[in-house]
Amino acid sequence: MLRLRAHTDRSWLDKVLPHLDQLLVEQAHLEKKAASGALTFLFRYPEADAMQRPLSELVREELEHFEATLGFLAARGLRFGRQKPGPYAARLLEIVRDDEPARMLDQMLCHAVIEARSCERMKLLAEGLRDVDEIELADFYHGLVISEARHHGLWVQLAKTVFAADEVEARLDQVLEHEAVVLARATELPRLHN
Image 1 (cartoon, rainbow, N blue to C red):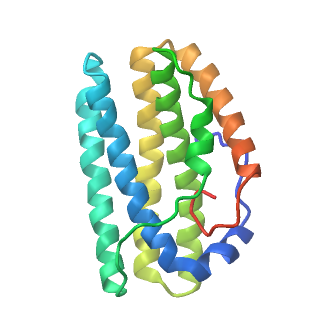
Image 2 (image 1 turned 120 degrees about the horizontal axis):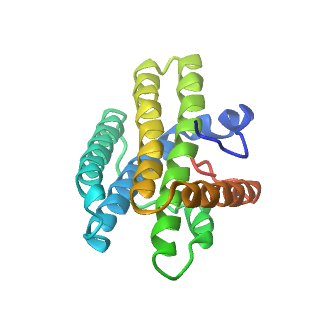
């Protein structure tokens, strides 16, 4: 379903699990950014009637995940604050065209691909957390896996309410190829999307 062109090796866990506190801070930022991205679409494209309610619901769900992540941070005695973002999203968004409506389509598909990558990595993370007896956190990430997969599908489905299905599929293939190149240029920051 996710159709990712590059797959994350389990060795990624060895790089990120020692930095679980940083990952949790990043998780809060990612949930907030996902809510912001959906909210931006509500304001930027009010004429796209079919997107309004689903994106409103998505904003609320992402904010619930943000709040839940804040709860995990507090329980671990961690503070939410600024964090240097990894370059993944900025590099992925380099594929977005400037002109409308192409810009709209590209941004929707970038959101979809980010959700797909999150789904894949969170699944690995949930499994890795079980291995180190972080069961409550593993359960949380397992729940996020299900949400991320649904969010991926939602962005693609919504794109197809505005654009022809074959156009969406063709451009999604291009964005997925681009995302594989972005991952190949990853840095060593311990991040979900790096």
